[in-house]
Amino acid sequence: MDIKAIRNERNGWFSWKNIEPIYKKIESVKKIDIKNIVVNNKEWFEVGNKQDYSTEENLLILEAAKQLMPWRKGPFKVCDIEIDSEWQSNIKYNIIKNHLNIEDKIVADVGCNNGYYMFRMLDKNPKKLVGFDPSPLFKLQFDFVNHFAKSDIVYELLGVEHIEYYEHKFDFIVMMGVLYHRTDPIATLKSLNRALNKNGEVLIDTFMIDGEDDMVLTPKDRYSKIPNVYFVPTVNALKNWLSRAGFCDFELIDIKKTDATEQRKTAWSTEQSLEDFLDPNDETKTVEGYPAPKRVYLKARKA
Figure 1: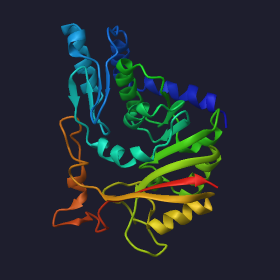
Figure 2 (figure 1 turned 180 degrees about the vertical axis):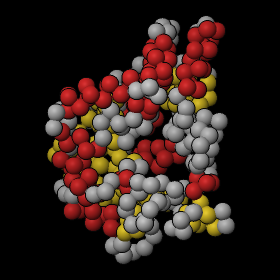
Figure 3 (figure 1 turned 30 degrees about the horizontal axis):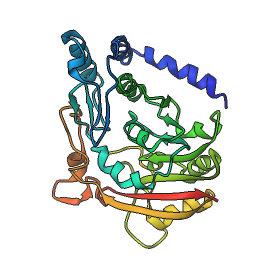
């Protein structure tokens, strides 16, 4: 697989008619000189100070932030603009942060969205951070924040199917909220395995169902109104998938039900959210009648 050719082809996506105006706006923001690099790695990832920029520059920054909606992951504070994302991703990061032994390691975030988790990982002092996500909008959100952060994170418009063919291998791979979108989860996990260096590790977050058996829910059409959810395993079934893909030493980090403190509509993401995906008469079920979303966080090592 020719990664360079794919990369070059996908850079052309910024000329799509629905993306090009946003791209041009972000290019205008990139022309703003950074007076002081201000980064606060907190629950709200903060970059820039409003007072460092002119009224016109601050207006351009605000217009760009709004044009980049919807903001799914975050929250961010950019030049004092509070971007309250649909997902309070700080909750998820707090679950995994103590399990990210990534200092001086080459790290990939597969399905990285706008890079919130990678920005938070900077404090862990990885050798290199590479994000994979084939969404031009999310890439532009990343570029917007990173203009002020000035990090050396690499963002690729590539998917999980490309990672094993990447120019180098990884020591640690984070993949959150991706596996249930794959029609062949074991093949996906095998691809991650091939992308890892010796004794490399993965940290995965995915939908799950309760039960001790090796069982998998296969939604008929949609799950929580999401059309491309194919398999929702029990924890034991997920471990079996990982074992078949060449992983061992499983560490169950957490199991957490998704609730309205973590996922909800905001002024920065006004489309449907969790409250619209659950049965209005029984919040333990989705609108389709399946068990309400619950996630498992699991870590494993390449065997």
